[in-house]
Length: 177
Image (cartoon, rainbow, N blue to C red):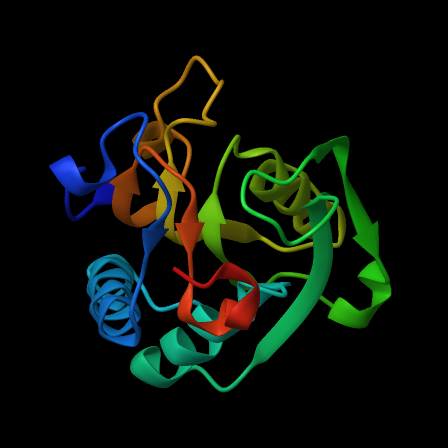
């Protein structure tokens, strides 16, 4: 389990949202690609729709992986900052992943809060026959992390840790500064 950077004063507990730039995303995906390459490049990347698809495609290009798939798994009930969450993740159309039998999979999302979405999707991929499932996220919001195990011991590849809500550049106008 790897992490590249530590939280800064900018994202200390209690601060407002952290606005990531496209440059931040470029740096984070480069960091994740280096971490993955240090172990082994997977056969397939699976992105969690919606936010996980952009880093998934970016990583696929960096890693030279052409097999990219997606799955819709959600916990938030809206797009707002600190949006309410459902008790359990909701999955739509898992059959869209196709045959996962025997594949080495890298599951990618933009952010992990509690880790429930990743854990749920890892179980789903294993149930579909993936022989190996690793996880990667651009960032972990430690303010929402409620597990006993530290994120670094649960998620295989983490580009950064923070302690606040993250606004990504693809989230559009609803989160203007």
